[in-house]
Length: 234
Length: 251
Image (cartoon, rainbow over all chains, first blue to last red; front, side, top):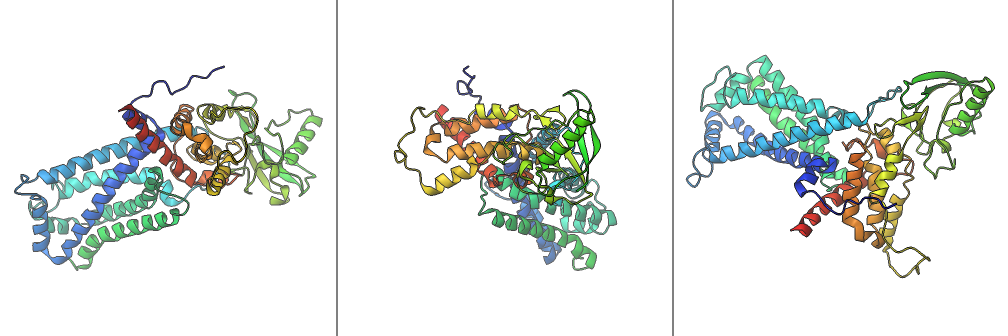
């Protein structure tokens, strides 16, 4: 009996990519790496807060005027925002669809319970949800200033200080950064393997790099609320 | 040795199942796990009860028929198949949980027997080469570099037991599929179908309702043949390469 082959007619590359678990995971990996790249730059920019209000506010001002006079003001900023929004959407949708599929693939649990995989691996889904909610609050707090206590437009230094002078601001922020560290610890290595960049020999390096990135981002971001709390930044 | 067994009993594919407790006496340390189940079944038959159904064939660790999750681990605590697992790995008076492979793509047929024909369909989608068959070719006709031969052999060791799927929290068949993709892809005989193989086998894998990979590494830990986790990475690389090549061919 001749089996039907799939070689006759193939769907488009995009269709194949999005419909396959391997392809969808690649979309998740690439969008995750885009966000990771942004976070490294974001974290480094945040550290300017330790050099005083004038320098930090000037940096905030410059972000809105990158590329001028070739670009109109805010154009570069909006370009970054659009890319990030697309990355967040692609990441979340692929994560949701793949998770749904994974849960459906194992409908009956084992009666003998056993701890599987590490903490970072097991918390990827909930950690991702926490990060999504954090981003919403973070934008309302320091971009639109809707929920900021100070809400002084054009003065990010003072607004950041206001956020980290509240107990809930510190709690939300530090919790989210812990979730971020764990997410990157598993996510970075996972992305490398998904994109076929890992190998038996390189896995140890990838693990170390993932841990270093996670720790660096966590420490860098958390240094700001800690700086405010300890009075280093005031 | 005297053991308490908690075994999954299920009459038919649609009937609800449950863990049933049995006491097995007179177990020798040198028995294999399957021989211990034989002892239980002899007892059950004498008592006029239905024996426990479980898959087994060669009983020497090479056929991939046995499929037991023992104390939550596919093939039990040792890195081998359940038939090569000996009762010396357990202690007198232990309570041991025995369950079937759990995955949507592996429905339970009866008790501990699951239907693994989903694996056959993945193999049918691309786990072959189109070299002409007949008498064996001259061994030196096609030179294969030693590292490639080793790599192919490492992956050819897969016996298709399905422990990777059973161990994976997502019920994913990535390790199984990658073993065949890497095995044939490493050899010149397998290269004419290099691109179609990986695309078709991954598509067949998805069609069967297996989950995706989240890099938990449970599959490679459970694999009795030691297929390594980076095999999945290599398959991802092959798949993305095939997609790019397919696009180039179309344009």
